Length: 400
Image (cartoon, rainbow, N blue to C red; front, side, top):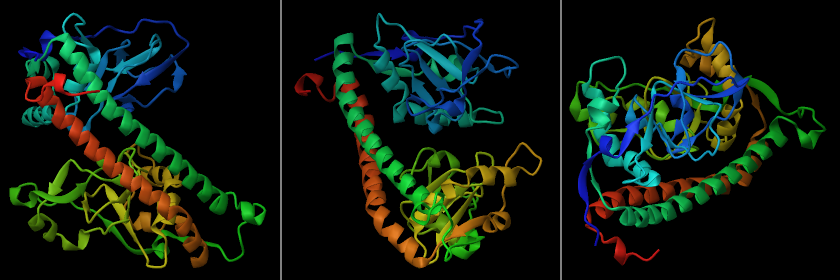
């Protein structure tokens, strides 16, 4: 059995602040919003001129990008890119480089992405003064102590956790394929009108979103001064919970029954459609169980004869319109409930929506099941890590 040593994070890695000085004609800018749960999301090249001042840092393969702001939002990524010569990271991202003599890069990544470290960093961030909950390497992350096993034990732990991650990735690939099928079917029926020679059918019409809705609800945050309103098991959806999600399975915060009852008219049933309308606008997600949202989200409870899957697919196509209408000459998007309810939308026949629903419902149900499975796998991975590190579970007893 391997013996672990209590070790500080700053003893196994360092923060790198090497300024980009390249002359590339085009570069790829990585902001905090471009990393999420281990992955770099943005690979778009832009002209290397008039770049905003915060884009300065270089990074390389096996580094870890870790956001200083709101650690619980999981804005981090393991760099698995061979050539990063024209990548530039924001100064709001720590570039963490492992000491390869004592720690494997993947093992360091699993440590930094673990729930127990992130929750502690989020707590420390919220105790600091400033506009955003923020941490620094020197004051919060660096001094954090972990149980560090030897390299051979780290290698076994990484193998175990990678197997779980492979299953999660496979589920994500299946879901992406299902979502592409849904999007293609929606486009064929309601954008390209392939069954009607590219023309809108006579029995289809344009109306407003309110006509598809039993109710449109703008969320509200229960008083944070009342601690008894929080800490239960009723999801409280905010914008970070919606990123890259079809269903919102897990939220950063949960309401108690008392907190939910304090605004009973704001509750959303399953398969309501949440749409972010302030700041990061145009995100769309389905509600997995009875939930509440904050005021940055407008949510649609469809009429009984309206397919929630049609409304979900429809709202995904309106992102640019939501952003445009919400800006109104300002750089900050803010589309209120009245404006939102009056969005122009295509209203097909009930029969058409019913046929669409029958076609895609099994796909959405499969996506939901795989998202739930991934959440269980993530919880398993996160619960295994500290037990494997401390020796509570002997890695030698686990067959890969």
